[in-house]
Length: 113
Length: 111
Image 1 (tube, helix red, strand yellow):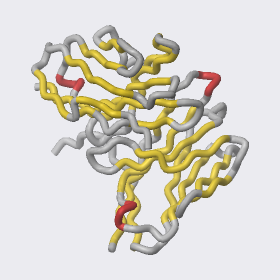
Image 2: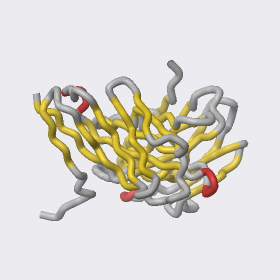
Image 3: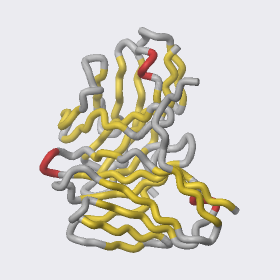
């Protein structure tokens, strides 16, 4: 049959394990990044952000790492829980080119109880 | 906690009809956005609005689309003559000086 839509990268982890979700961004001028969680049928929910003057930022159970050299962003979720199952998007903003945020393709995280 | 609210949550319309999607951004925010997400695909930028005018728009945001901030609280997206391919989730978002906050979306189904 015909395939419709993008095939999201998927990640399956056991409950309690740590998850690492990766994102490659496109614009070397981007200086502000946000990770969003999107559950089925809902809007993107802010998780954590980071500015380009930092390479690491920690929140509750989440850590974002930024490597500007290779334009790579990662989201680490500690002790992953079933409620973490969702699609995760990174978004980048480059103020010099506008106020909009550009979203990555997303990664579908499934937590196995 | 302040939030972005959107109405309707779901609208079904016939091709060629006009649709207005409504949003109430977070009250002290300065930047307002519309994004859309076709089922199973990524979130796509449509338009941003600042200081009562469009600041950026994507190639998706053609002459069939318009935005308005008719009063101090509402922010609307109008599609003048809907097409089948306009079927998607439409998300409103607002921003102060940092985080971009999204509403829960309006699902538009064009038949």
